[in-house]
Structures are given as structure tokens and as C-alpha cells.
Image 1 (cartoon, rainbow, N blue to C red):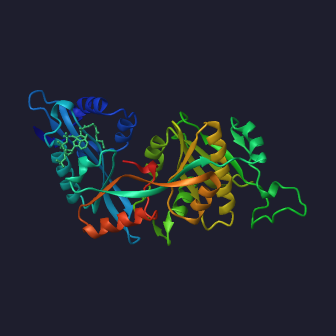
Image 2: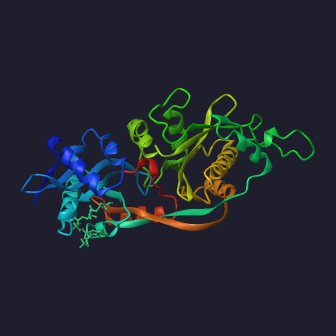
Image 3: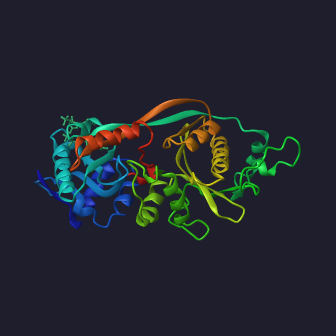
Length: 365
Ligand SMILES: CC(C)(COP(=O)(O)OP(=O)(O)OC[C@H]1O[C@@H](n2cnc3c(N)ncnc32)[C@H](O)[C@@H]1OP(=O)(O)O)[C@@H](O)C(=O)NCCC(=O)NCCS
């Protein structure tokens, strides 16, 4: 078997291999967001007809390290071997070449996500656990039931304490909380996210994401340091099956956002963005939790999954959204050292297990 990096002539045969190996419509579009993809796509060729019968691709990333510094990572994806060539160590050999190339490129660690971790263990990868909570959606109160009628509208208003008429029982409104927040539906599945606009620019979300993703004012361990290119090209693809909502102040300023992915039997919370330093952070989280409950009802989802980094605000969100939550974990992520020592990977895995280290689904590889 001939092993090398891919050339433009391999592309149709490469895509045919992926088409047979996966039911993953995003694989090619995500690969195509990387302008240097072929130089990092390692292929095995059938010596008889030159067809691509095996592939391993990797993409460079900057990730938060365990100590607040930034790490260089190689993200592995598009791993496939044609049926007739399986079981002969092809993927092991291609992974080894990819890791050698990452090492030359200065990568500290390699990262991947998989449902078949046993494929990667002999190549030095170890899984890491990310805690999550699953539960039935909490019951909505009367006020929220009324808002259900507005679900299909582009914009709907969720009552907040500021709406309550003044009276002896009126809860005090929080600082800056006089004008109610509005939660607006910004994207539904099938509406292409690349249509960023003045009404919803990615920069508005990026500022909230960065504020929420800081751990002691340093980058979150394991999280991809997002670039403009990620926001403009990759995140819209990974969230193309998701819904997005923005929480807005009365002047239209985006003060929070939420990404939900409806699926069979479960509504997954994919991303929450809020600035923890904002004096309205609790109010934003409460409004977005109510939006989650409205969408769970709309999709008739019996279960809501909250997989978010550990934070007082995500605890608040989960408490507002889930009834009798059950703790679980996601063990689809794997890491291995490249130039870094094994201790760096051990600390990243530990940070992930504690819910502090986190890799957002919008940054998948
Ligand atoms: C999984 C797949 C890539 C393996 O390719 P391959 O060339 O046959 O793999 P190799 O012969 O190099 O085997 C590498 C290791 O994976 C293990 N392995 C292979 N297929 C496996 C599977 N389906 N599940 C679990 N382990 C598997 C092998 O036993 C071997 O383990 P070892 O190194 O500890 O002995 C191939 O079966 C495939 O393309 N499947 C469909 C697409 C897919 O699942 N890709 C991975 C998605 S993350």
C-alpha cells in the first residue's frame, strides 16, 4: 500500500471513500473550510488502481492549556479505511504519519472525537470524560405557557421580574434589570448561519463566548481559541442543525445567547454565552433557561441534556431547566501527547473530568 499526503487528483476518490464509510453530510464541507487540507490529509492508495482506500486528516488548533497558557493541538478527523482494506493496520500507519507531521509542525497534543475509541488506543490516545446532566424539562409556569403562542414568531418576549406590576409582593429588580430582557429566535435549522448580519454579527457572540470561557481570566483548558475564520466558516456548519437565540437588552444589545440542537428524544444544549461579570447575568441565564423549556415543549422532547462547563451560571441554568437531573458523562474525546509531556495530557483530562476543561461542539474537528 502506498502512503502519502493527498493531491487534487485524489479528491474524488477520497470523497467516495468517505461517502461509503460515513453518513456524515458535514464532513466534506468542514474539510473544505481548511485551505491547506490536502497537505494534512494522509492517504493510503491501492497499488493496482491508485484509489484512496484509507485516510487520516488533521487540522491545527490553539487550545487552552492546563495552566492558562495556550497549547498547539492537532485535531484528527476523517479517519476511514475502505471495507476491503480493513484490519491490516492502515489507520494505525496513517495516524503515525499524521502525528509525525504534527510533531514537525510544533503540536503539543493531538485531539479527536470518536464513537470507537479502541481504534485509537494503540496510537497513544486516551479518552477524557466530560460531565453532563440529563433530565426532564421542568414544568413551565403560567406566564411561560402564554408565551408558547408566540413560539413561531421571529421574536418573542419572555416575562421577567421587571414585568410584574408594582405591589407589595413585587420582587426587587436586580441592578440594571428595570427594562425586561427579550429573547429572540435568530436561527432555526436550515437557515444558514453564514448569513451573519448587523442584526446578529458573530462578533457580538464572540465577545460573550470569550467572557464566559475565561477561567480565572485565562483561556479555558481544552477549549479552541476561536478565530474569525472559525466563527465565519466552521461554527455555522457545526451548528447548521441547531437553533440559536439571543437575549437582548431593551436597546437591542445582545447580552446572552443559546444554541440548542433538537434530536430524537433529546434537546441538547450546545452552547451558552453570557458575560459572568455582567450585573444581569442571572437574569440572562433565567431567560435562556425558559427559552429552553419552551423549545423542549415545542419539540416534544422528553429529555433535555445540559453539557456545559462547570460554572455557577450553568448550575443556575440547569436548575431552572431540568427536573430531577441525572449526572452522566461524555467520553467521546481523546487526547495524546505530541511534543508535550504525558503530565500535560493528564492535567487536561483531569480538568475535563472536573468540568473546567471543555471543548465546545461548534469547534469539532
Ligand atoms: C474504524 C476504521 C477506520 C479502522 O480502520 P482499519 O484500517 O481497519 O484499522 P487498523 O487495522 O489500523 O486497526 C487499528 C486499531 O483499531 C482497531 N479497530 C479497527 N476497527 C475497529 C472498530 N470498528 N471498532 C473498534 N476497534 C477497531 C483494531 O483492532 C486496531 O487495534 P490495535 O491497534 O489495538 O490492534 C475502519 O473500520 C472504518 O473506516 N470504519 C468506518 C468509519 C469509522 O468508523 N471511522 C472512525 C470514526 S472516528
